[in-house]
Amino acid sequence: MIQARAFLGVDSSISGRRWVGPTLDQTRQSEALQQDTGLPGALCAVLAARGVSAPEAPAFLAPALRDLLPDPRSLRDMEAAAARFLSAVQNREQIAIFADYDVDGGASAALLIDWLRQMGRPATLYIPDRIDEGYGPNVPAMQALAQDHDLILCVDCGTLSHEPIAAAQGADVVVLDHHLGGETLPPALAVVNPNRQDESGDLGHLCAAAVVFLMLVEAGRQLREAGHKGPNMMDFLDIVALATVADVAPLTGVNRAFVRQGLKVMARRARPGLVALSDAARIDRAPSSYHLGFVLGPRINAGGRIGKADLGARLLATDDVAEAAAIAERLEQLNVERRDVENAVRDAAMAQAEARGLEAPLVWAAGEGWHAGVVGIVAARLKEATNRPAVVIGFDGDAGKGSGRSVSGVDLGASVQRLVGEGLLSKGGGHKMAAGLSLTRDQLEPAMARLSELMQKQGAAERGAADLRLDAVLMPGGASVELIEQIEAAGPFGASAPAPRFAFPDAKIRFVKRVGATHLKLSFSDGIGKAIDAIAFGAFDGPLGPALENHGGAPFHLAGRLEINSWGGRTQVQLRLEDAAPA
Image (cartoon, rainbow, N blue to C red; front, side, top):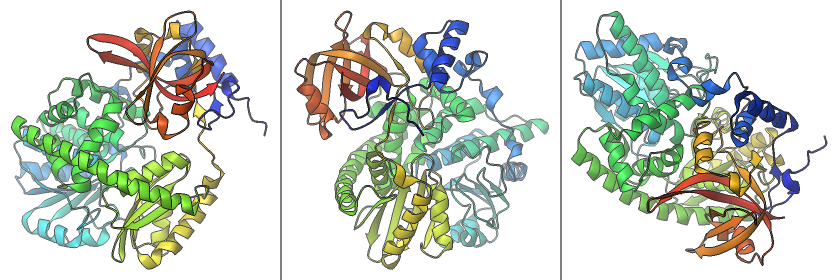
């Protein structure tokens, strides 16, 4: 197969990446879009890359949730789950919520708690300790909850929890989850999960909070049929948006509408927990999907990673401003501690992985005392650095708990589940892009060898440094605040919908300055018109910073994402610089 010519002729950039631009068909589609719609060329290039035609463009740029929301009843067990939930509400039964300790689990729990509070009903929140109890329902916790509750809702967990759910004698259990299901289901009253083996998979991209949202939508429908009224579901979309982005669910279809509408709800600043956390994180403008994934999400996760497991859920669920402020301050402190712990584990894991070899189909590392709360983040860092599936495991004596992250096209969750079936792991599961696992020291080497073999069969070893995909060429004079706002209409951007990247060819660097230890600020122009500011975070962690700092007046092709920088009352264009190549 003949490889297409590299974009702008960049076969190997300063960071060693090949630049890939639009295909010939995409270029033609972009030109046709511009002619038919009158939209800016850069926006048309973004739409063409996403396969959007001219007739589809208006609906794509203004997605309506009512047009994209699936019928909740298309999921198995949904009607039974909603009916049992409403029965517990109407009969004033005792309800418990067993949730995972990450953002998705916390958001799922908060949705239920807030909805129930608006209906005048309390609920017991139970989130297991990551270290002492691990992921998902366990027998002692479920037995204890069943003694005092009539209904237990397991959210973002439970699909593989056969024994713990069977132990909940005397209570009904409803599972609302999205993790990959096994060949058999646990003995619950209902298991609502788009990734059950007997589901079509059409809604497999939903996070758990979205599944909970759909259950509440169905509960609202059943309430209306009975002549009653439930809470306004649109008010809950801020939490659904947060969970969707933080759980790295693909921002396509209804997920895109969830996040788009959820960001609008969040901008109203009506939920005390999110307001307090945004203020603690010093977010001074309307939130974007970036803030959800990289600012708010990590802070909420910090409670489950190295602090008290229920902090995130309590923050999202509370209607008390003072309580929200106190929890947000604690999460901010924990996030700082989490970064310190993460950095230490990351350095050790990277050194170990490099010694083992970064060209293998699976990059992995394991160490004594590595905190279970950060191994997932470190696995993500290894994955990003190597473009390979990565697993990081922390041991406490003979027991190891690990987490893995995968790359597009390589199903990690199914492979981990297969290893459990083969007896190579004590416990494990997840979805395509992420998985958790438990094992003993004796299982470590055989399990990683087998997992590496399964990754290789899926083509993981064939990957080099990730190509840098670019949507179009822009000149500095064409990069305006108005254009960026128009491009934002094609968002939100995230998993499976990457933020558009543009190349600025033959740029002349006018100013360059090192910021802190690793960052680089510069301004550039085409030598004719205005200059644009750019910032490259972590540029001095690799060759990009030194090459541009010592540019010597030479021209460069620059590539990155455009953003609006608001500072000191001024609003201007800024390039988030990701790569460069000599022109």
